[in-house]
Amino acid sequence: MDRREFIRKSALGVAAAGILPAALLEGCAPAGTGTGNKTGKKMKISFQEGIAPGDTLADKFDFMEAHGVQGFEPNGRGLAGRVGEIKSLLSSRDIEVTAICAGFEGFILAENPETKELFDRTMREIIVAAGELGSCGVIMVPAFNRQTPCKPHTQETRDYLVEQLAELGEFALRNGTAVILEPLNRREAFYLRQVADAASICRDAACAGVTCMGDFWHMTWEETSDYGAFYSAGEHLRHVHIASRGNRRMPGEDGPSDDYTDGFRALQEMGYDGWVSFECGTDGDRLETVPAALELIRSQWEAV
Ligand code: MG
Image: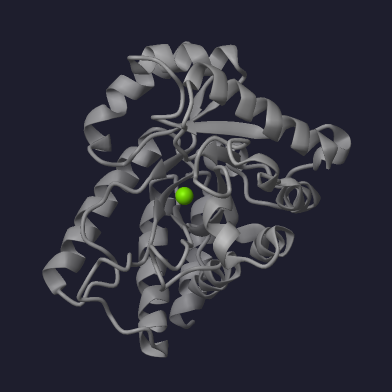
């Protein structure tokens, strides 16, 4: 049995043994397990911590519940120390933790062994906390442009990345969660820019704990087709970020260019059952711009 086959069988073994929590198997199910909007499936909307108006997390959750937002995407920084607080705040609410947005230190493609070790240690701490919160995965970027020295963009580096991710994905699976690769636009991270490329890395890692996502903001610059990008990710697609398409504000703040229907059509046809999570700022009053954004994307989802 070669290494990849071993990893695949290990992942299947974990799932078969019933170790994975229901959240991973159902709540954050990969594409292909849903029913699609043609049968009336609603979009599952999630907010990062800064999206909803409110002075406290409790205020923000009140707002989210009042507007039918059932997902919360916290930042990973310091997450281990916040597990109790978040669990307590959500215990009586119709809101669940979705993905965890990064928060680790160092990076996986670091040339410097100490920087790589820092990534390995802090990423694993966040993965453990993510598992305790029932999260569908921890979002990560292989290397931002500003992170140097970085391994060169070669076949050898890709092989290394796939192997490292397979190990990390196994660790995530054992903790009931996953890692989620996020492609970014070229100004932020030249290494991984397109959803299909992230998906092919997931395929080659051959581990159910290695997944990917698409962010409409980054896709605006890097993809020639929202539909093609999402569809190409297939079963590896675990999460989606959304923002306005010109200035990364609330959907709708950039006018007619904020059209998500092509991407939504792919998500529905794929039976995507994951979350669409807000990652954006606003130029207006959140009490007005957030409800307007929700109305816009819900109407576009229904219009597909
Ligand atoms: Mg994003």
